[in-house]
Image (cartoon, rainbow, N blue to C red; front, side):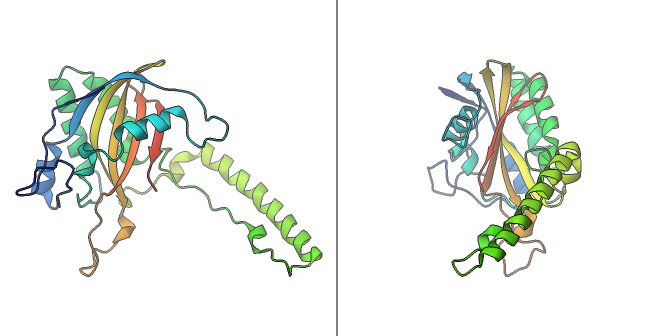
Length: 246
């Protein structure tokens, strides 16, 4: 059972559906939209555990996607025009915390989780090193000698890639997305329970600024149509589960 608290619905004139995305552009419109963020309580535990054989998602990832993705509470922000920098993130984060406090939920824990997300610049959104695949160029006409050469080159590339991954792990902040490149705002926060303790699920809308980097008039503005969802421990901000659309 999902209990939604503090929800105000944006509607198109004459429309009754609460999942209609309304264009939200400009500081005043965005400020008004921030007052409509949703804070809720999700009854029932967040499932934890590793990936299962044959599955590519953990139980926690499956659960937060099924419960919180493609829902009216987040879809109505899909036409919000993003803006580089921290301004919009801070506006929406403050609105979530204010509602959590007014509803006598763990607003301090929510603040820790929002701060741990670092305005979307974190381990989950960090860039990955490039990895090339030489074997994809092998055809039936490729000679055995050429196949052996390409396979040896691929092994060297795999070893180099493994080293790049180790470097990323040790220097993760170097791979954080630039603050002007990732347009992201938190639009929902839901108190949950887990075997590890109380937590928060934080739902964000996002887009890369490169979808229209210069704001060309003949291209649509970068609207936040994508979704990222984190489940986090309230006490520490540790990430328990994360999932995003492509």
